[in-house]
Amino acid sequence: MSNALALFLDSFPKILLPGLAMTIPLTVISFTIALGIAIVVAMVQHAKLPVLTQLCRAYIWIFRGTPLLVQLFVVFYGLPKVGVLIEPFPAAVLVFSLNEGAYSAETVRAAMEAVPAGQFEAGQCVGMSYFQIMRRIVLPQAMRTAFPPLSNSLIAMVKDTSLAANITVTEMFMVTQRIVARTYEPLLLYVEVGLVYLLFSTVLTFVQRRGEKRLNVYVKKEV
Amino acid sequence: MLLEAKGVCKRFGELEVLKNVDLAVNAGDAAVIVGPSGAGKTTFLRCLNFLETADAGTLSFEGDARDMRSMTKKEIRAYRMHTAFVFQGFNLFLNKTALHNVTEGLVTARKMHKKEAEARGMEALRRVGLAEKSGHYPHQLSGGQQQRVAIARAIAAEPKIIFFDEPTSALDPELTGEVLGVMRSLAEDGMTMLIVTHEMEFARTVSNKLIFMEAGEVVEAGDTAKIFSNPEKERTAAFLRPFNK
Image 1: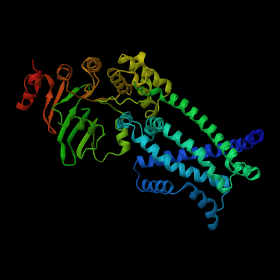
Image 2: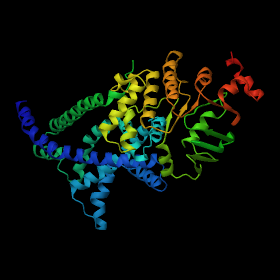
Image 3: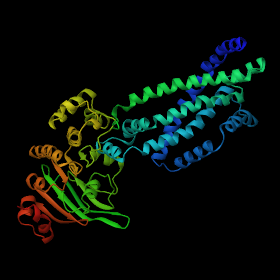
Image 4: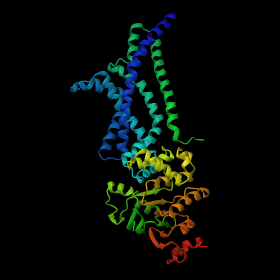
């Protein structure tokens, strides 16, 4: 038993370190890009721009309709066949951003549609341009609505980054697998890496609560 | 003539909402559009500020006549710099305080300096009696207060005309009075206003021009006192009878 404890304590920093150095940057970078994609794609659909709207629908259709793992394999193992070689980390960022962007675009679009039409009309009547109204009135209100589901997606992504181990990104899960291969303690170590993911998610849940409180200043409290 | 609309037509699918509606408003007029529900009053007002696109009609503003269908977005924005619109449902920006509701258009559309806009915004809020609520968000204000902030937002831009679309219809009687009071004082100051309303007593005492609409047409238009005391059309007389005491 003391052996198990020693192994647990010994491997904890070895698992946590790639978590901090790889899992978190991979998540933060990918999610930030995904949010950018989501807002642009949602706005294109909201404005019903011809052709571009169809392109956005096709993008969402493909990236929501195929497994994340398959997308990772296509980009990392498939694309070199046609001469496109991407390093593991950028390949993971590319796939995670595009995949999450497709899901979040729908979240943001739904939130934009939930903003009452009168908000837009009021903006028009004070002489504001389309982009001014979007940037200062509609998007801030939509992002508040979208905040809880987007937080959900962020937490999901933290865990999904473990799939990047399959394309040789040395994130937490891959490091854990290596330790297991050396020590033959799968139960202990996989539970341990699970706990580290849980720790990350817990911190994010806490941050979400704080964020919601700050964003809710202009929202009526339900009695 | 400040604003003149001619031959405004609008249909929603099969339904003909406006049939050749004409209107003329002089600077300083307090004009009211009255009539039964479904007469097309609100649609007409929305067409005049291009919230709806009329199917036909000309609009001349300060003598500049335009085909209403062929106005570009840029021309519409330029026109809206001189107009303001007060909605039945207030439509205050929910993510902005009372003061920033008033300053938003000044800062973004009119490129006014923030400090100057805020000074002007406070003055407008004072004008409607809400200076002390400047930091409140819409959900912290009563309906009457929200509508007064909306009126402050309208006057802060110093428009040449303000359109009011049933400004008190969403308010209970107690709050209606405070909004009508503000509008009455604007009229006394000579602000040009075009008001769609069901408040007949307000129409009779405040407006100088009355337009009676029914079923998408103007039945009668002219001097308010004259129409109340001596309407030409039998339909107008029947509509006004309950309010003529």
